[in-house]
Length: 322
Length: 306
Image (cartoon, rainbow over all chains, first blue to last red; front, side):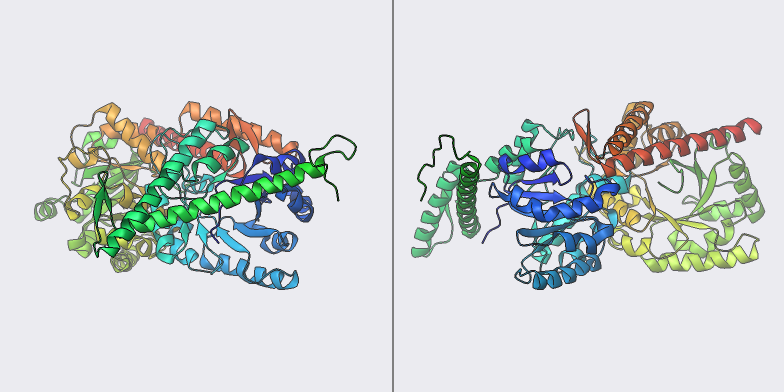
């Protein structure tokens, strides 16, 4: 099945206000954060919250991930790996061994807790110069690594001691080198392109739209976000448009006809249609279908959650009780 | 934070009597360069004269390096390695072996010339496609290494780029990123980057130079090679945080520490999010600002005292 995680929204697990509202935001995926949004003094408390928080935030049909701490890998995984967690975000992965350690711990926890072995993905964050240099080794370190980001981010900017946003593209190599390594390793690369004018303000809906357009143009299907205002632009913007779907269908038709005529290239409306365009159209249609299915699952989940919230005495849309 | 404050690396032609402009420029580092015309230079400068020149440069408060050419590594080292030197710049390094070889020779010279053992540093200048491809291995090849420097002029030559071509973007930006990342991944400092000024060597327009330095800093370079004394002040100022930036980092620090007292490790500031890495970076920038100010004071003291 194609993963549909257009918006991957961080939720600080120690903030009850954010946790309570998380399911209403419409995000495809939610990360319960045990790392940077939790102060050191609250790590233990945060860990203890994971089990009960999973069903709360999953009510809207989102899949649930957890970001653990590099310093507390074992304790965090033991507290966090329960049915319902489908991905571990491993911050500050520096070497292949960092990933292998998480892999081994996951395997034993999966066995212990009735989760299919290998089901939990590992998403290593590339957050330092060393990680960029080792990105191929990291990408090939475990079959659990299915998707990986590029090296751009706050921690890398700390490692290089530079500003995150300087008004030009400072991160050419840091974005491109891990992306090349990931594609070579057969891992889905979700590094984002440079977007001029980004300021780092987290709640900018307009910036969210620009981000979605840039990602969509680069055929990237996921984006990690810090603010709920960005959910809507990403969920909408990373799904194919009706025009794209119509065009893809047309391409399939034309190409299949070409094959019957034993031809391989045609030009339609000034565009070249060949095997690449054909494959791209196929992928786009599969992606569109997966997005639509995800949207339906979320809608059903939200409807169910709302109906359960209705007070029993009040007038309810769902009066058919059996 | 960076171990060294080396924002400006002023290239000075090596001669028995260093020019006045070089002694007064106020650069963090003076790189004595043998230049292309070697036989002539060697005839003109005896070893003892070179030893004196190194001492004179060191007395200005600058750290002194000499630039060693790959075609004459041993001869250049023998001629120029004397007490007072901080280290050597190895030009056009291609492989870890180049560094290992020079390092062994440095060990011998340290022994014979009263220089503390293993004290001389190596700054490896990467000036070829081969050097860039090997830059991670090069960066890990010796404990003497302190920096990788982008050799832009050599890279232009090796990659057959046209220095006169007016390009919108720096054609070396990927390769510079590679050198930078591999340096930093190995705990070294990255230096260089002043495209296109370093290539054309045109008398630098101040605005243009400031912009180039700013871009280098914001990419992660900690200093740049200065082909001309007029670059020094701009590099010294450009590679450290501005007053406005320092004021902002103080605010970041306050806001985050206040958040921590309230049990939050992620707090908003002017629409941006301040969390652990943002806070740490503010601390690093504040420390870097202080280190630069200390270095400037130290050099001023030397110049005033002389």
